[in-house]
Structure formats: C-alpha cells, structure tokens
Image 1: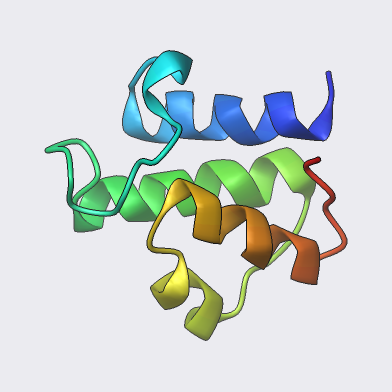
Image 2: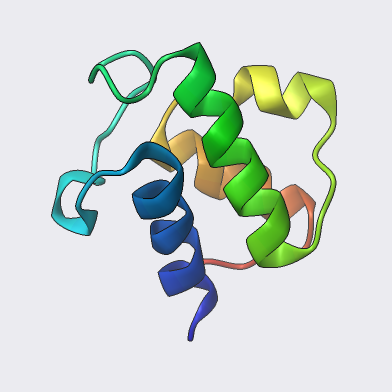
Length: 79
C-alpha cells in the first residue's frame, strides 16, 4: 500500500467516508469531520504512519490538502 493510499484510508476509517469524497474536503464541511471526527482522523493517521503529531499540527490540519503538507513535516511523502 502506498503512502497516499494509507493517507486516504486514514480519512476513510477516521471519518467513515468514501475515498471519492476526499479531494477538496475541509474541516467541518461535512458532519463526520467535527471535533470528535478530527481526533479520530488524527489517531488513524498517527497509527498508519507510526508518528506522533504536534498539537499545532493537529490544530492546523484543516483540510485534506493541508494534511498533505503537514505530513511532509513528518517525512511522509504522499505524491
């Protein structure tokens, strides 16, 4: 499984949404991505990539695209 597939799967598991709906997704744009869903998503990402995200990055993780930028900080390339 590629890093991009792991990233998408974390969204699928954490927010319980379909992969087709990820592009352009923004925090609180859908009911599933509320504060509880956000922490579930972060937990899924941390598990998938064996990382521990900093609090500022968790707060800044405001969209699918922004998450790709943040993941690079942890050495995770999603291209």
